[in-house]
Length: 57
Image (cartoon, rainbow, N blue to C red; front, side, top):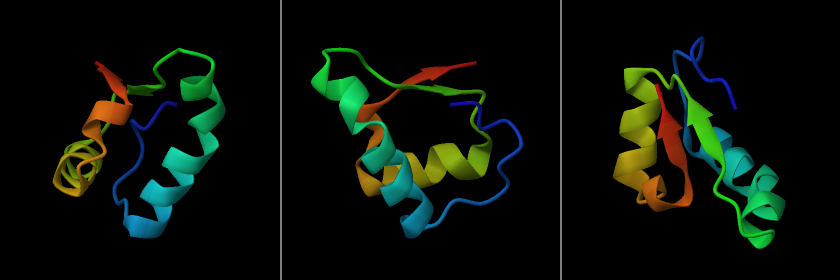
């Protein structure tokens, strides 16, 4: 997912990301967060969800 334009991510948005990328994880792949902004990175890290995603860029 390209998150380069995301200026804000709250818990509802993060839940959506986790839920919508679940099929990718079930297939043995790791979903990518492409070019996440600082705010997005911070929310993903603080929530403990960082291991669920690969960060690119």
